[in-house]
Image (cartoon, rainbow, N blue to C red; front, side, top):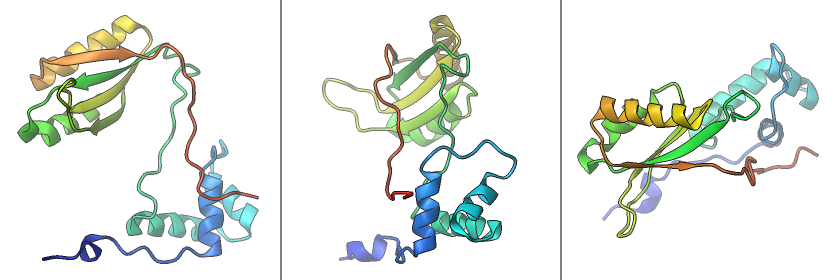
Length: 169
């Protein structure tokens, strides 16, 4: 019998510099040509240290995802919908990859279906209008031959924040 410890990735202890960098990337990055230079200057290291640290933390699995958060309303996208798809389990990776490649898709992930809700793949799509979202879902359905889906449109944004693991104070 294999131990769970053997299958888990080893996460070395975080240094003070690691924690300071993580604290600063949790918030919005400055909109400049070299945002990591700004971070480096704030904590008193050079830009290469910041870049190498972020790459190491990602390689070690401490940081799993590093990406932009789309404020879709401010970007001119007035409609967004979570599309719930019912996909054959043996095709979920293939279909997920194909759906994630669509330009209007910002999120694509798998969840376990349940008795009352048979959907197992979800995409967040963005459009200028609800009609655009319906058309995109139809295009995605045609491209993947997935016919069973439901669109759930956002009506109000009640919270949109990132997790905060370390304080930047």
